[in-house]
Image (tube, rainbow, N blue to C red; front, side):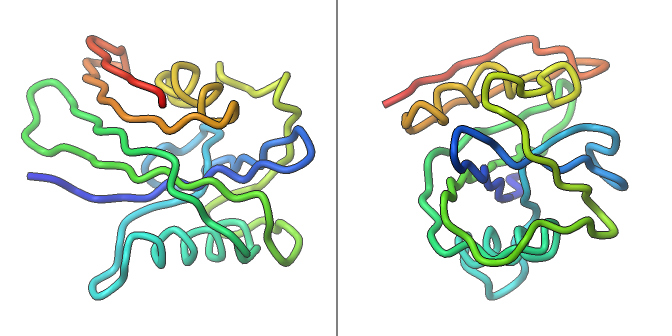
Length: 151
């Protein structure tokens, strides 16, 4: 069973906008902005909506830059994450009930406080590559297996 989700990376002037997750899945971690797709919504529409809801900004341009599947050992569900890239947006990032946005230099991305897979694919995406792959997680978010390609 697949669950389709979105993740948007906001990148501007050698900085990346991340959000500290305040509740729900991923609480206490820095992450991009995204989530589940609502019924009758396209994947791109969902990415746009999630950025507005979680960061208070509206993407002017969204480019799909990858698809990564996440599996947890012993579970049937696969999380298929469509990754989008945004360099232009309107508005000013604002804290919401779910996320607290903060700009980071791309040289100082807080990987230690992010999902452990991010360090494998995010630098390649920021370098302009398209990312495809999969991760298998075990207990305590340990990566048991990974497969990535960049084009």
